View 1 (cartoon, rainbow, N blue to C red):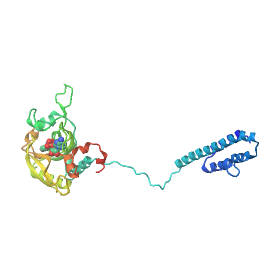
View 2 (view 1 turned 30 degrees about the horizontal axis):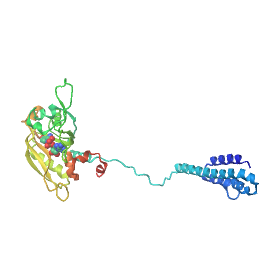
View 3 (view 1 turned 120 degrees about the vertical axis):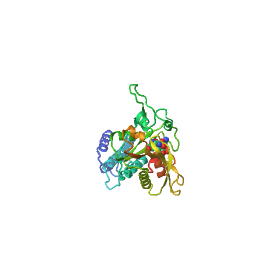
View 4 (view 1 turned 90 degrees about the vertical axis):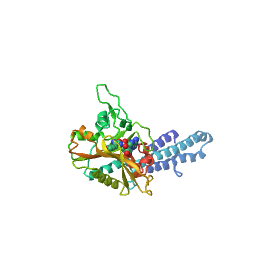
Length: 334
Ligand code: YSA
């Protein structure tokens, strides 16, 4: 047989094979040990004359190797194709990794839920504030030493705007904004992000979260505040908490207090010691004057707590910076 014709025929047969069975048939036809066309050709070499053998032998051998290689390659191709088409519907699916809420969002939602259950409304306010709402209206005029308590990020702005803009240093401006447009009695909380231009350490960040609280009515007293704050802390820490009031100073309250809490030593890294978690007090009469309430008719309490600090205590977190590190090994633990 003409070797060239045999080569063309075999190559095309390999190419046409559509599955492994076809391919096996092609192999048997050309390379089968009994009657394979190429093998028969090789076997017939011994009956040829020396000159003929020298001519046909190398070509027949090359053809055999070429076919073996082609069949192997086509086999691989068909296997890959098969794997892509075969879907095993009984195989368990790949696990989808769903995201989850950041620990600060989790605690904020918990705080919202507790206060909502105490009949407080929840609102939010702007992170860019004016000098007036962040300071002046809160009884902190320019050059007042109390401004030193809040190192501030000031924003550049066109000179036509007379009031300077800043990143709010606390959520307290929302007390003013809310009272300007609402009449008592009411009780609200305002969770939100605040900013301070200060050095960071394990307990201080340049941006962190606070929750402001404000309750105003005819007969609201510090006793009401004590009940609210006690109920809140008991629920947040599952009853595992002691707390105390300490006299303090904030220009927008009179008297001013700070609230410290103490958790059992055995459950908490910072347990056994008193930790400051919020500033509070009875709303100062100058604040009521600024929003045109009559201080002889209404009174109220206000508070502002650091959400990050509460989360650190609740979840035993040693360093506030972990919240903002973007390190998934940390976030996935919650
Ligand atoms: C006081 C009286 C009121 O009637 C109403 C609100 C307040 C709180 C006041 N506006 C205020 O900001 N007080 S504060 O400067 O002492 O901050 C309150 C809480 O925020 C702190 O108790 C602390 O928990 C947290 N905090 C302050 N600086 C922080 C911080 N948390 C993280 N990083 C910082 N740099």
